[in-house]
Length: 417
Image 1 (cartoon, rainbow, N blue to C red):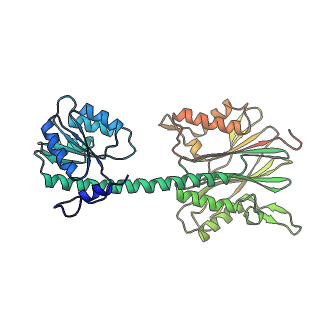
Image 2 (image 1 turned 60 degrees about the horizontal axis):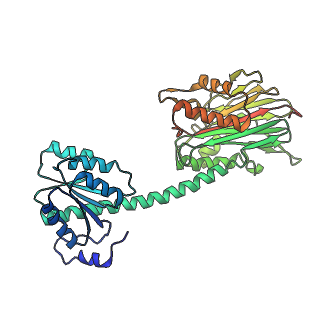
């Protein structure tokens, strides 16, 4: 809100000790049980071009703060009923869009009492009786602080809008949350802990007989991790087979899949050679034969996948492995598992098993196994939604401390429903 030209003129530089014409302080609230003291302060403030609101008690002032935009408060410390200290504490507890600068007027000068005022939220102090020149100087200091605060708020609003758009872009990396193939269905879930995150899951056809499913988790959080995730998405793209490092083109123009361990090794080389970053990532990648259910996998620092058998039993497969992007020429190993019709393979990020149970212990594999068992009757996206709901229940918080992502493969077998 800008200051009117006549107000700015009233603060003209011709005045000795005049205030800067920044315009961030317009409305000043004076709180004092002495009508004389309010009049003295009000006269000076109005002469300097401020709009002045008066209150004779802390409780009255608190009510005015709920109905008026207050930029600056001058409050006496010692008042009957609610003291200036109590009013300051209550004022800071209000939900406000902007920061209000708070100056306590006091005869107190001991360090302990000053510290108490700062502790409850006072920004500055003035000793009574108030000197006009000192008051102008303290208000000028308050204007500089409020100007910086409001500039920062405006910049944060721009960043917030950019992050919202970035979240939309990141979610668009998963074009289809459910994909059906001849013999299997794959459901995907991505829930960043903030606007954007470092997790990604995806699926792509290798050829008409095989599919590739992956999950990755870039170290750290926020924009840097999200940018790296977007870059990695291009290396495992379903829409650009020629760019997909997991695919190898054959002389007849068709594609076959590279061994999972080789996929991890190629991603490791690309990360170290082409990305100037200190970030690394964990990876789980599965190459599923739709006809036989035979699945080749590589696990590079990612949590061990869970197989939910058709009879309800849950087992975890894989032995860990080194994350991708840490060491040149790192070695990765493939392993195999067999899916039977009715089996489900869940690949998930560590935001699942490291979810805090009521803020203390982690969920871990045992807790995840229990969740899968309770929701065994659900399928596809419904199971993944139930997983997120259960995580929120056990953690008693819908805002998880880490990104949560998962890919669920439901194997039906050739010609399965």
